[in-house]
Length: 433
Image 1 (cartoon, rainbow, N blue to C red):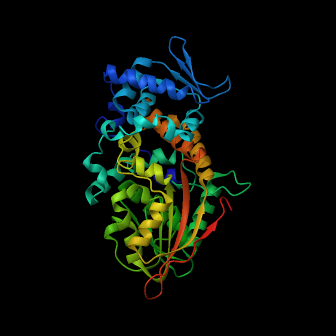
Image 2 (spheres, rainbow, N blue to C red):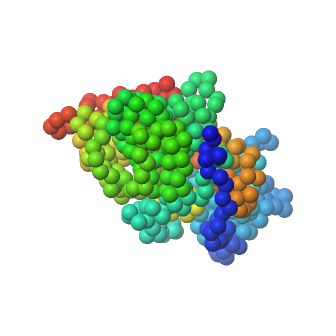
Image 3 (tube, one colour):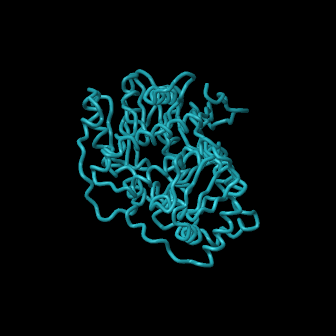
């Protein structure tokens, strides 16, 4: 039984959604002129082509380089001038600019992201960046609303582009693997191996998704409690658990991780830490520590960004925050290691990175989403939504292609008694092995 057959399509019924409320470009002539000069300076050092309406060409790229077409230059530069971190994405949403392959175009930008704005002007960030709204701080109430913003769009939207087992995180593409579903199964088994999940394991999962990991853990003999804040995800997850005949082994709950109770042999969290917000990273890891039995193991899969970029952008409010993941913040690997060392007794045991696998995962998701767009449009979603989602997937793919982003699976052990003693070094598995 397929996920789609378990969750029949339902038309979208909501007030005018945020993505359809993007209006005409705001007017800011002075800032637009500055933004245009900065943009021209940046692209003229990049291996890209920019075609402005009217025939002007920018960029240092040759005939085969990635192409950006700017159909409405005045609107484009005004959006950049008012707020470049939001306006650049909005310009794609409304069609001010287009690209035949936005991921290929964005990759050179991502490779040079720290240098696109001249260093003297970077010091002005605190005065020109938009402030984060209060809802970005992920209190218990705001966390629920932030999750609903993304995951309660419609299960059918996600069914349109995810693999057959409905896994919404990086696939692990081993040498020779091309099939996305197989890459996801391999990823799930790898993270369950890190947590030593097998027959009789009492496992907690923080972040249910659509229950793919919980179902696999139950197939391996575990008894699973899995938590989500998305009512839509919970509905489909419970259907899938029942259809698999595993209701006696998997208990799916609508619950904030901070309210979780009990003690477990294993705790698994896959791409959840990015959603909790930087001010709650310590609480996230303290929760893992609190819920683990002595001798237990935790496994965390996390998207990471370089530490210097994390520090430089941690207070920024971006297009991704506004339209895709409100309240989100990517950690760096040093930040995770600090939080674990400072706030828990957990001992780092293993770590494994596979960023190129995420680039391939996102490439396949974007292709599937566009190939099946007619099905999503039939649910009531607009072309603005299509361009928003396409840009989000392409933007993320470019980050991984450029090594600006990475994804790690991290294993931790809970000491059997006394205080944790930090080992000389955690065992680092080589990329892609």
